[in-house]
Length: 452
Image (cartoon, rainbow, N blue to C red; front, side):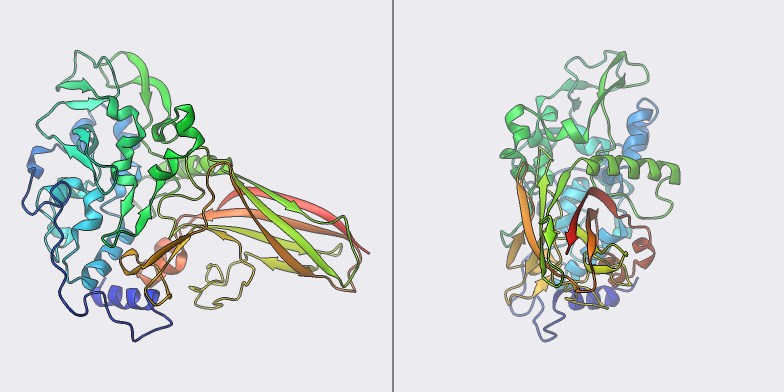
């Protein structure tokens, strides 16, 4: 894919209403950012000191197979991620290339492999493995709760949550209480932009959640316990799932066997299936030709974080709602997709702003001129409409009824979710991946009334 295409895509997606806007590096050059922990000026570890996850497979076949299908394993080969890194690199002339990589491959940034204007093809094999087994199990402590805040100790023991590691282990192993805490995940799952704009806040959301109050951690849901063996030669014990199931499924064809991908999709659907309750309130009777008021309420049933969470600026969680009369004639709809499969909002190529009543939960960036942008490094403000745990958001819809429609009418609604908007993938030259996107049904509701 040519870099010129990516730069043009970034320009279009961030300033469709203002083609004269300046690029972020207009004026004084940005200095290369340095963070002594996660983006050091000089290497603090040697990538060669980390073993490939492939080497763990012989003794830990189950853990490896689960990790291999995870977003941790996909983190550095994801074409969407690479495309966004390329646009960021072009905008800053390579000066901030390490920012996104610091979490996606801490071994690469701390190992000195990510130089300004780097290429993914130039990185070592271990750097391209992304969040490897040792990238987690060689963490000795968490120094800060954001932006790759963990401390790597490649010469140390393999650490984990087992209080009594197997004595037959092929490597030094020791217990670390950090692996049982949500703070361990916060190092990469809280992200703050250089401009201090908060980008991803799952850990901050968890801090004020019912899950935290009751002692449930990130791992409780995303690494559920099961009975098994930590290694092929270890005793039976309680272990943790290493798929790290969330809402993303790798879109690249061939990254994993299709049966594995289908299983992962089922797990995502199971996670989302209990995430919310959708409620509709309407009057029992409405005179024909008069306005029908529909109150739509969505309650977040997730105990640990907002709905949605993570990269909420890309997530799409919305209400699809239809009103039909007794003959099946549609009186009203919102939340339907355009022929490209996009929501009819600002970024729809075919029907921009056509859905005036669109109910969507997530977040959006605006730049310093108030224009929508998809790119966090251009954002002056991050505006959220996510739903905190246990809370609800409601909207009223006002439906015109026809004097020709009498009798029973129905209102049917679905709360839908997908991880990435198709238009973004198409704009980045990833149209084939857009075809593999799934829309998940989170909740449904239906009510009836009489038009008289």
